[in-house]
Amino acid sequence: MEKINIAVIGTGIYGENHVAFLASSQLANLKCICDINKARAKG
Image 1 (cartoon, rainbow, N blue to C red):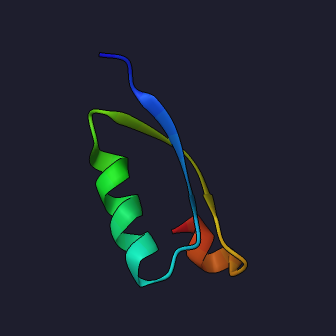
Image 2: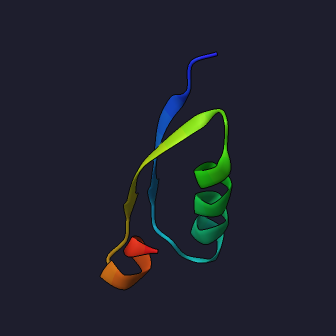
């Protein structure tokens, strides 16, 4: 199965969970994380 490319916009409470899940997913490529707070976007 081909992986899908995903971007996360906003790294609030739910965004942090989404990033953690997608970073370890075998089904998705986490391509981009965007947030107005640069420190949070860098993870």
